[in-house]
Length: 291
Image (cartoon, rainbow, N blue to C red; front, side, top):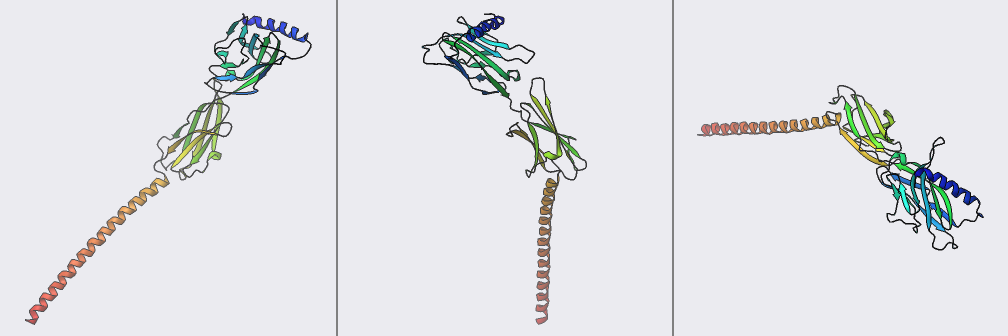
């Protein structure tokens, strides 16, 4: 069946429905809040229910459409009519063995992207009645592991430093936050930008400026999603900072203490030997006087 002819078919369907007595024997029930993950499969859950008057219902037509904007027509995605199923690539019934006796008419999107986000319309005709309902799909994407770099690349305590962190591939807009080695947050001192890329996902960038005399030993950049959940992080350890210099001083102090201790011990040994020689000489001289 030609996709363009679906509109004529359902125009006829609406006219027939308007002429009915108003009692609903068939109803399409869909989950209202569907959420899909970018790059994964997504499903719009819908089933056909009937009243007791309808025995062993048979589906004659199913049409899945994505609703367009005010100035755009609805896009037909999947159609079942006269025993045949046609549709665009990437869309199919959730149950691979679906047939006209199967009341589960859920739509499966095989590779979810941001263009799949929006409102959908599902229209159904059966041998006992018909119905139309709407549902929606929201798409989320997880941010990639952040990357971090410094300007200048080789950090010393003789000049100011700017740390730059970025993370891509997420949706909706998230946040980058900064922490030092004591888990103290520095986000308020940073500047963040969110850029919407061509694939509909966000790129987050953040810069943190550090003064040369207040640089910590390490900084961690953490990416959070729009709900405030932590997704990933990266840590930059900075050599030559106050902490590491203090450790070097302590190490040097320990070495100096060991040297001083060694000198003292040697000095005491020398003094002891001199005293022993003096005492020995004194006793020798005294022995000669006695004779």
